[in-house]
Image 1 (cartoon, helix red, strand yellow):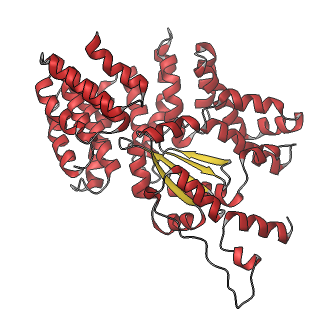
Image 2 (cartoon, one colour; image 1 turned 120 degrees about the vertical axis):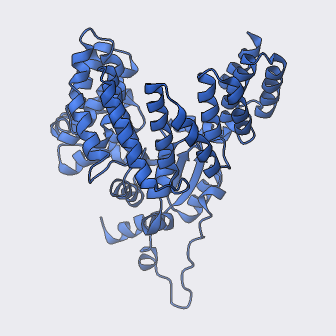
Image 3 (cartoon, rainbow, N blue to C red; image 1 turned 60 degrees about the horizontal axis):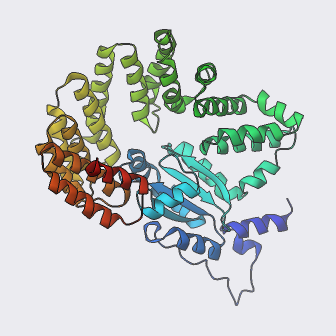
Length: 454
């Protein structure tokens, strides 16, 4: 790339080298780009307009109040000098997936996983996306690569031409982008369009070959092709998946559990799951998403009938979180939610909910400004046949609920009221909630309405 074109790229991205490449006379110094507004203060449209004005990329942070991974990222990763540097290079907007506008954007950009960090160019073209919990060492190289490279996915796809190292590197990125979209059909169709040399080079590259296998496995799962899913899933799970192993296990185990040799198929995954827990949960190099690693192993223990192993794992996970929290539930919302769900799972295993029921009011007191913990506790109490105890929690949650979660909390309230034979109150809840909801979320609205029209 020539110095001039390199400067043009830098200028397009709004990087600090802009002034050095396009310096004006000393008496008229270049004005700094407009300051970015706080992410939480910008709508998507405002963020896109600001990105275009600054000629900067736009990072769209999709999250939700119930998303424990989102809290992990906000508390542990999107902080400090590294994040400050990202915000100087890009405009950031935060999108609540539970809001009507957020739900529409999720559908528009095929966001199927929270948190998701969608990176767009100043003109709105997609540069890439990052899914789920990541460590700092995983997140920042990737987000900075997307920002600094500034190439849209179409441009990256066009760079995959042959068997050269540069082409293979671009191809790896394209394949990962299809996987991040859950677009197995699209990724495999794109692979089939490549030249023979490019196709063979990607299949000979270990990292690219594993991503191709993951796309093939995902395609089989999406088509509910049990035979292919079992074969391809076993191939994928034999690969070096690191902290992403639980996500592939989640796809594989339902198919394996329906087979005559289910015990053998699931038992074959036990050692790798246990090793991930040892290294990625309790080891020196933990995964960002410890919770999924714990539950992947717990699901395997459950399927194999080893409830003692599941109980021991959950108890160890609880002790690990309690040690990290140190008695301060306001310290880390992600850890709090891990503590909640580990206690919930342990209670379900034993039938003893005393520890869980003692924890929930403490969590509500620690985070009083949202609906989540009151709603979760109310739902648990209702499921355990305690509608009178559930109802006050669900009503407290309803006072803070909004968007799609307003409808979901209302469903629980209606079920509690109906269990208490308060049908008129249940109908009133439905009418008031549908009025507040308006035309949004028609499927959830229809489910709520059906509760009193059955």
